[in-house]
Image (tube, rainbow, N blue to C red; front, side, top):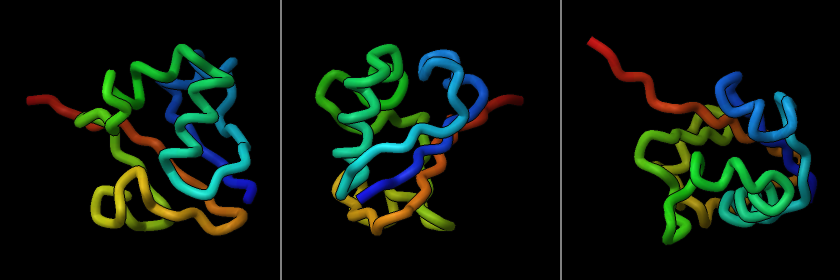
Length: 91
């Protein structure tokens, strides 16, 4: 299934300057694994050493945060778009 992953401006340089990356994947975890194979510099920005989603990274499938679904095991329908957003902190 082809899915698109939309990256924020801050991560685009680590994906060859691409705003969106299209890949074949059935789950969010599979999508991230394939993205990290094609763009290794993204790996430590999206997942930790154990392969878990980093705490400061939010990923949305439609209007739903994947943390509220099945996390990296969230299944992706064909044509799905994932939106990756880093957490914003400040004061």
